[in-house]
Amino acid sequence: MSILMKSTIEQGAKAVSKGQFSSVAKKTAQRMNKLAINASKSADSMSYTYSKATPEDFARLTSKNIKDSYKRVTWTNPEDGKVYHILEEGRNKGKVQVRILDKDGAFIKNAEITPKTIVIFDTFYSPRGVTHGEMMETFVKRFNPFANVERLEHKKGLYELIKYRGELPMELETKRFKELADKMDKGKQVDYISVSESNLLNCLQLVGKTGEQQRAILSTSPALKDIRPIFERIMSKGTRIFEAAGNDARFSKVKTSDRLAIEGVEGVGSLVNGKIAKESCSRNSVFTQHYERHSYRPHLVKDENDKIIGVNVTGLSGTDLPLTRKTRKIAPQVNGTSYAVPVRTAKIALNDMLKDVI
Image 1 (cartoon, rainbow, N blue to C red):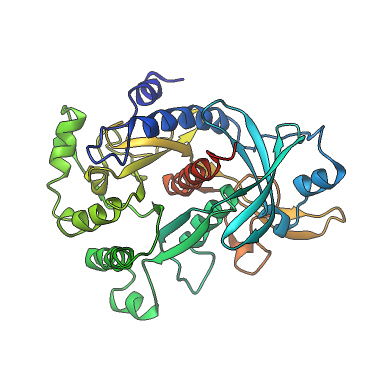
Image 2 (cartoon, rainbow, N blue to C red):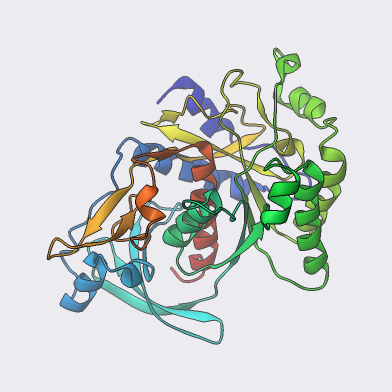
């Protein structure tokens, strides 16, 4: 482990006066970072033998069918490092009935969990291949198939794309979040927001400053004037906002998304082979508290008859996307700090959904 990463983990996160990032959340983030470091050292997902599973459970755990893939998850409890396999049994009145197995597939118990709501802010419109937002949504749903997932679309339609030539101004981004905040004021429940689009700043003036001094300077960014009070409204309701640290590493120790200067917004960086990815902007624990894997290798999934049944992009066992004209175009490798955000958001939501169950 690099000294830099060790420092990030040990020092953890910034203090948040409003409690969005408490000492408990800080310790959980540190434990999850250590798990993510180990996982990122391998490009493939960890394999299990399920030696104690019943034939029925074994079939569900090893199925490549896309339906089965979205009805199971392997969860590592950050509190003690124990691994559990969780199978969805059904849904009733907003609750999810699950079957909980241990690392080897042995039955532990049946339980009922309450889904948390995750909102994904991203681009979902494109006349061509799979959009960035669709990829983010796929990662959220695979790493937490039991959550309620909603879209907050940045580029809503062809009219805006044509009018602004694909480069939407900041006020439209702010507008989207304001619309969500207004709905929340009227009672809409949102537990987490995953933001993979970053507004990056070149922060050479921050060189040599402490983390808190850097945050104070970043807080003066004109782009924060309108979005800050909206984010504060959202977080005041207990909603956690996860923001990508960004992918431009020219000034990696100081360059970051200015929205991470907003008290309570949690930064997510990315890892390659157990170290912070070169492309991951922020290495500053004041701004970036979470780290997940940076790169994935999509591949076609075949059934027992060697027939192609879909596409895998997450590295988890099974099928993530059906085989279509669009999914065939997914590149041989997908990467970026943006992929770390939905993974960490999904995992934290799953922690919260299971904390009173296991």
